[in-house]
Image (tube, rainbow, N blue to C red; front, side, top):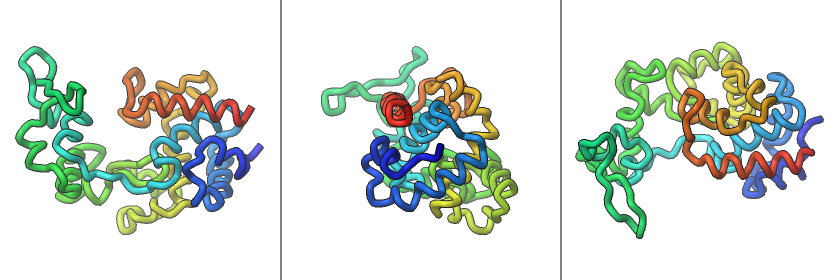
Length: 227
């Protein structure tokens, strides 16, 4: 059964301004890639809901502070403590990793951050690739290689027009394509929502993704709504 507007809003209440646009294209995308049935649909809606700020953000926000960089990518932007961890400082009553010099130099500069974070990864080899192929769509598709493969699958020239993934239809189709090629329907059938989030956010299973608690809360809600 396709998801209804009412169901989508019960799962993603913050999507009220855009839900009417997304319901039909979500159903087209999910049907094309066999994301059907309660478990698959619940997992998919939960994950894309988290990645897109409940369908309100189709372009990656890379306007990080130095603290944000250090605590999102500590292996790149935090000061090591010489013991396998990172130097900690107290920020608003919480212990946080201390930004290194690179983090301090990049803070508040989204284009420079993108080009540094994604340089040499996911097919990004030319100067500026990190910014051009930053996260877009409902699942924040990232990297030149993924853009190329997705474009070929969907019949889109995403090298020339990477911004197409910011359109609702293409954003949904790209997310469902990524879901399919990474075998996430199989994990959804097993109810393995944590590893789905790990694959989407880190590229492999067995890791704790950013926003794990929100991903799980949305999944639990989606299962109830779609029961």
